[in-house]
Image (cartoon, rainbow, N blue to C red; front, side, top):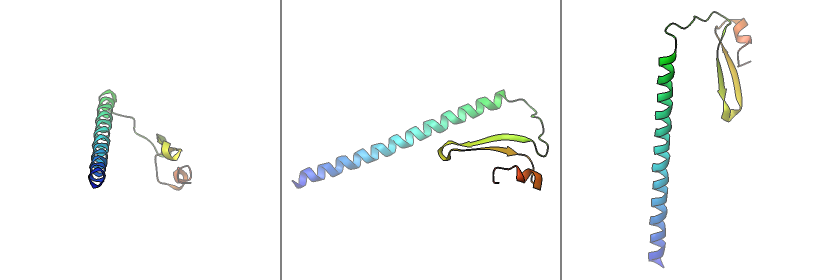
Length: 87
């Protein structure tokens, strides 16, 4: 009985360690793919992007897990802050 219990504990530990290795491996693969995508976008990007002026929208920020979508606005004056995502 004790031998079977020890075998179950060892197999459980190996399964948990295997799950940790798999999780680490898939995370590294995802990071590598994201890095390759970013580098590809940098090569396709124009050399001199247009300069944003105060009050211009410059980006869209989305966090799907929080179901949140915002537009980023250039500037820190009262008019821009009233249009900012924090309000």
